[in-house]
Image (cartoon, rainbow, N blue to C red):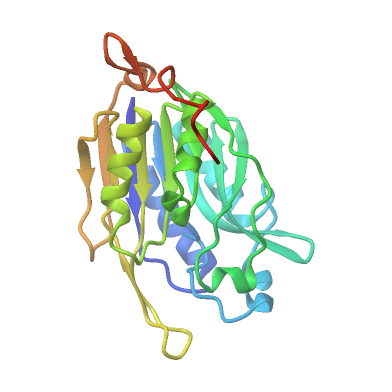
Length: 263
């Protein structure tokens, strides 16, 4: 199965331009599963809840979700992307999965980062796994990486691939996702953005890029640089993520000492 990340640099508020640019790039990728960054259609640094609601969209009927569904249908591929989802007077930092037959699933970010807490509503969707062609995929968004329970839950639910739309500014995530792959024996696809946003005085955000695909053994199969847009496409075998044995007698799930865990 050929999988890809698409590393972009959206312009804040330019939804139509950002989406159409991404759709054109998607059309040129030879991949069956493509992951885009968090908030790929709007940009990241909102000044207020009102501004967020003005730019957020209904899912699956909004502009970005609809255009991604059209692109997925045209390519007969699956696409995961992060966007601002509006539901009434609430807005969520969400990830959407679409495929050749349209919308498949939506995940709302569980762990909000920094000023996101002021304007987004905390996610209320359970972690879930979906069939996407030859693979079973789960979604988490950006700062969810810091919480091992997120990736572990998806792995326990049967995910072969964790799709991870991101707008990373902290430097630790790329290496942490290597660990998430190893400890869960899954593939991960982190799609980050690049560029700078400084729409709030004194809060300049530089996004670190470094989008990547990692394997169940922790190998970095592809990684982008930190400043330029681009894509990485690699071929994987999803069934590798279903082998949970480290040795003939050590199964990463079977050996869990739940009798000793205190969560």
